[in-house]
Image 1 (cartoon, rainbow, N blue to C red):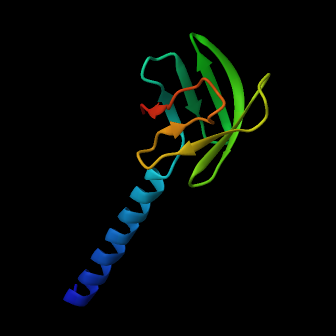
Image 2: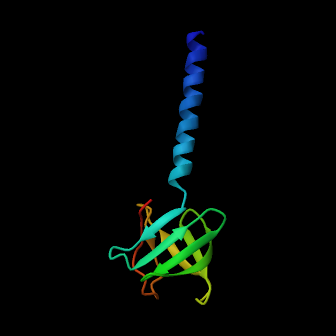
Image 3: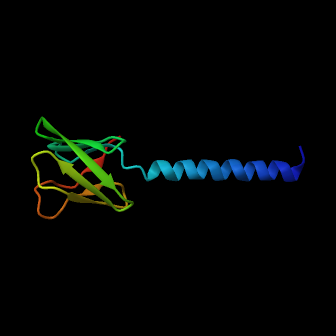
Length: 105
């Protein structure tokens, strides 16, 4: 294998790894919880989510962009918009009692 070919393969492999890491970092799926453990949100692929409060849970759906997650839960006003912070935490709408939710896994 020539040096030029080795260099090209190394660059392509490095670029592929970088793309995979960036794609993983931007994923909103996972479990989120507030500092006290009272509120939780489990976000799954396919637009499904579960909102938890003091041991009770309810089914939800969501859509997301790079900066916002819009949560629609049964029995709740439509479209609770969470802001996705730079550290990956979710800041709730200001008119709710839900505190900031931090990603746990």
